Image (tube, rainbow, N blue to C red):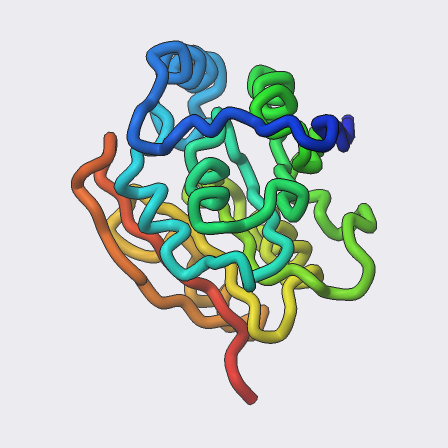
Length: 212
């Protein structure tokens, strides 16, 4: 199922900003319940904290342009993107968990919220050509079969500019994308940072196209 939202605030009305430094208790409860219901789809037992959110978005600025976020959940990375200067109307949030859709629509009314599996990215024309500057992924790629990881990456890089990057969080000791998949798609991965100030501790990888 695919559901899109393009709600906008009236001109002149400012949307209250919830800073990444505070995580509402309701978010933790909602996220944990979703994990209990489907631990393979929800990658962590709690929403990402401010430390890893800052790590995920440290290379993104207002000049990055349109950004796609995969698996935004309750929106911790989304808030961090806004804090980095990305315009809310430049955000496309891809979420498959129905528990989070209404929450995302309420919190980010100027963003485009799309209810679908990230593996379907190449089946829908979300953008013309390839204008996207970055893709932020909170998906649990380690629990997915290889063919689905390939579909997600292929779809994402179909929207990314040549100089665009795919940022992936992981709670494992190494890159969650296997070398044969990276090689087959002509991609390369680099760890851009780690933090223990998260539950669980996390690392972030930047995935880019290999230079000819």
